[in-house]
Length: 164
Image (cartoon, rainbow, N blue to C red):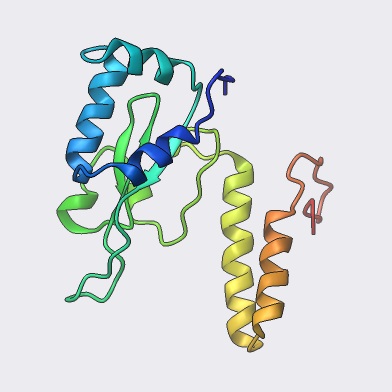
């Protein structure tokens, strides 16, 4: 990861305030990042540093009753879909597209850090326990804070998991 001089927060704001469709928005962003257009915007984007952005409209497919795929991009030029199946999942990072639980960190999204893998495992365990034990809303929220509060930087001892 490298630090930038400009907040990554400008990217979601730019997307949310744009009137462009997703593909046009991405194309213009890609052209700006590659230096093909708008020198001033390119200068700003180069000051951001590392980023991964998940974006799209949250929609449910009326046929499958599943969430429609979301777009993901990173400053490294990676582009793909998450929560995708069929032809949409047939990209370079298919294993990411097919995951039910998805998380983003400062790592490459198709090479997640150990903390991302641990978080995914913890969330899966929390959901299973919450369903089996009929958690209240408060119990589920508390469990989620536990997942997010895990200190993955601690050294593991045999038979123990850090942050638990």
